[in-house]
Picture 1 (tube, rainbow, N blue to C red):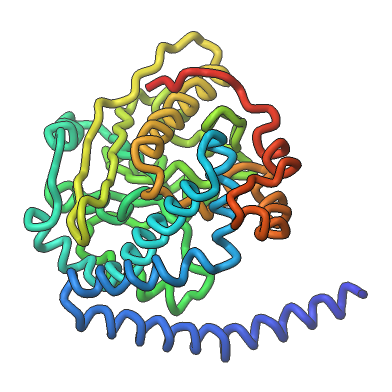
Picture 2: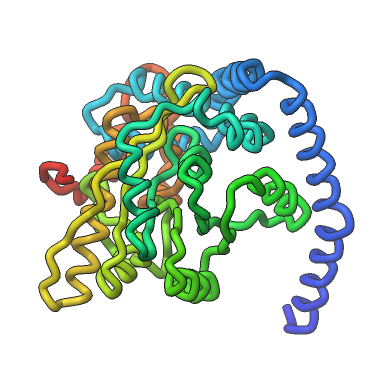
Amino acid sequence: MTKKKRSLRWHIKRKFYLCTRYPLELIGTIFFCFVFRLLPLDWASAVGGFIGRHIGPRLKVSWVARYNLMKAFPEKTPAEIDQIVVAMWDNLVRTFVEYPHLRYLCAHYDDRIEYVGFEGIEAVRDDGRAGILFSAHIGNWEISSVAGVKAGMPLHRIYRSANNPYVEWLFRYFRQKIAGVLVPKGMSGFRQIVDLMRKNGHFALLIDQKMNEGIEVDFFGYPVMTTPSVASLVLKHDYPAVPVRSQRLKGAHYRLTVEQPLQIEKTGNTEEDTRRFMEKANHVLEKWIRDDPSQWLWVHKRWEDSKTMWKELYRERRLWKKGIKPEAVFNAAIQGRRNYVTKV
């Protein structure tokens, strides 16, 4: 295909998305949000959980979750993994349908959120310098940002913008009650982060997504690509980096646990110090996930082989449903696993 034809196809596709697909997606999203916003929060969450438990595990993407779980917990049986997948979908769809209620949660946080170690947030707010709060796609991860509302502290957030620019506007609307700037991922976003932190800004970000341009560190005994941005800011400027864990307790009730800032001894080898810091941060996330695997987003292709090997597991689904792990897939999943004790 010539360059001119490729360019023409790209322009046609873009026109179709902007004029047809994106508006239809926006209409569907608005309808979805309108319906679940009309429901009381507890009802909306319960309906979302019901939909998640009964539909999510049947979706093809659930085989990504099953493969990842088999990799992370090789000792668990297919039946145990399937139970986690059902509970994961319960939490995940609840999180989505609670989005339209995020503005309400920002105004009634004490009615819904239990806080542990909140003085750690207040210390970051009052120390007269910039700070970082980091978490993962665990529990209802949007609740972590509500900590900034309770503390009266503007909280800039790093996030992945929606592919649909019209839907992106809607998501920004739900987050309006949380003071702070929404910074898109990428190099331009990182420059904006640096500029805001020079003005003593406070940032919240999720560090559990795969980054092709990141650094390789350990996670559940396997190497994963991880963004080094938190470590770079901490090591260069001595900003505190505070782990904040979001947990779903029961229904639309949550717990936020603020842990002690991560410390790392500087050796003068910036590359090695960065790797050690991010590995330590990953082990914090791993500890949370091991405590309750059902609350993490297992459909991420977090490990490199997750992008392809889940398809092999899907092809062997009849064997899996009989309670048998396909030997070739299982051996490929745990290949290169390191024996170690999780550190915090």
